[in-house]
Image 1 (cartoon, rainbow, N blue to C red):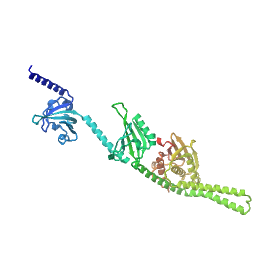
Image 2 (cartoon, helix red, strand yellow):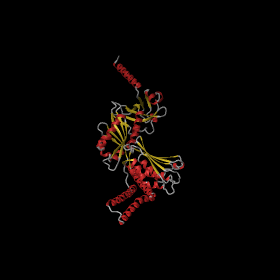
Image 3 (cartoon, rainbow, N blue to C red):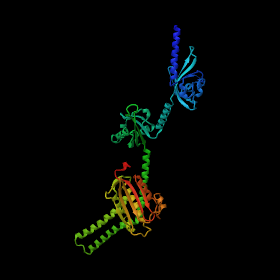
Image 4 (spheres, one colour):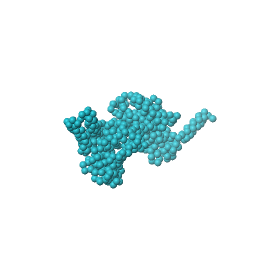
Length: 508
C-alpha cells in the first residue's frame, strides 16, 4: 500500500474515532454557520437528551432564534456570563427546549477560520447546567435575604471562633464598617463570664443536636447604648468528609428599640398603678380616717385620765404613770403603723423585683382594709399554703392587685342582705406556679359583665372609674402571670391569679 493511501486510511480511522467519541459524548457537540443566526450545520445525538430535538430536526435551524431574548446578545455585549480564554468563549445562557421551556446551557465555542482568517464555522460543546444555575440563583436569593434581614446573622469558624461573615444588620449593631476589614472573634464580643457560662454551652449544644435556641445578652462595645441578644445557633457540618462541625450560623437581634418601648410601657404602667393606688386611698378615706381616729382618741383619753388622776392625787407611785405611758405608746405605734402602711402604699416607686412570701402580703393587705371590713360586717377567712411560698415580683404592685380584688369582694355585698359575709383568701402551690384566689359569696357577676370585666372604664359601681381590674390584669401579665374570674351570676365570684414561684422565671 502506498504511503499516501496509508496516510489517508489513518486519517479516516482517526476521523471515525472522533466521530464515535462525538456520538457517544453526553455533552452536546454542534457545528454552526458563522453568520449572525448561528444555523446548525451538524450536531451529535446528545442533543435529543439535552434539547429534545433529533439531529435531523435541528440541522438547518437558526440557533439564534432559540436563545432567550435576554441572553441572545451575551457574546456581543460581553456580558458577565461570558468568559474568554485562549481563543475560546464560555457562555452561560438560556436556550429553548423542544417542549417550549428554557434550560440553562454552558457552551464553550471556538471559531474555525481558513488560511486567510475568514470564519468558516463555529464548533460548540454544550452541557445542561440548569440544576447548577437554579441552585446558584437560590443561593443568591438567600444571600440577598440574609443581607437584607433585620436580624443579625453571623458565621463563626468552629475552631478559631473567628467571625467569617456578618450581614449589614450585624455590622450596624456592632458599630463597625465593612470597609475597615476589622477581624472579629466571638470571645471579643462577650464578657468572659457570659462567654463561658452561656455562649460556649450554646455552641456545644448546637454541635451535638444541630441547633440551639435561647437568649444570650450582647452589649456591643463599639456601639454603646445598643442592646442585642443571641436567639439561635445552627451547626453546619462538612458532609463531604467526616461530618464534623465546620462553622456556626449565629442569629441575633437588636432589641434596643424593643427595650426602650418596654421601659416606656413600664413607666406608663407605673404611673397608672400609682394613680390607681391614690384613687383607692381616696375611696377609703373615710374608713382610714376612722381607723386612724381610734388610736388617736385612745391616746387623748389616756392622757386626760392621767392628768385628772394626777390633779386629784390618785397617782402616788411612779409605776402608775409608767403604765399609762406604756398604753399611750402602744396606741401611738398603732397610729404610726397605719400611717406608714398608707404612705408605703401611695408612694411613687420604680419597678422593683424582690423576693417575698405571699402569705404575709395577703395578711398585710387585709390589715390595710380592716376598718372597711368592720364597716361592712366582713369576715376574712384565710386558707394559706403551709409552705408559705415565695414569689419574685414587685411587692407593691402585687399588694395593689390583692387590694383591688379584696375590695371588689367586700363591695360585692353592698346591695345584699347576705349574712354572714365572708371573703376568702387562698394561696396554693401548683407545680412551679402559685395560685391566689379571692372569693366572695355575693350575688355574682352576670354573663355580659363578665365579657368586659377587664376592659378599662368598665364598672358596675356608681362612682367607680373601672380601672382597678384592668390595671390588675396588666400587672399580673407583666409578671408572666394570668388573672381571671369565675362566677355563675348568683352565688358569688372567685378571682384567681397565677404567678411563677421564686426562681422559675427563666423556665417560663
